[in-house]
Image (cartoon, rainbow, N blue to C red):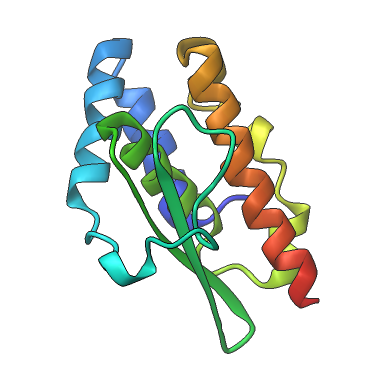
Length: 136
């Protein structure tokens, strides 16, 4: 179960055969995100378990989950953008149904991220799922 925005990324990745091109694409997506307001970069929004600094700021509007994020690392900022495309706009119940590992596996991310980056992605996914579960 993936959003239309995530399906677009899957299609882009299918078109970009070389992993370095895919990596650049992820970075470009991160650069295109609006920066997170400094006032939201607080301990409550900081994600532990990431090698770089990561902040996720979730909101729930009309029963739909949305989050913004920021990182001091370009690739991680891009990964936040990918996760936003996967989760933003879903209901809280749908958030918990998403098999993020399988969806990200469709992009080949599992094989191309360092162990530290993979741990960081897992920490972000865990934070998103915990936030959704707490609101149900």
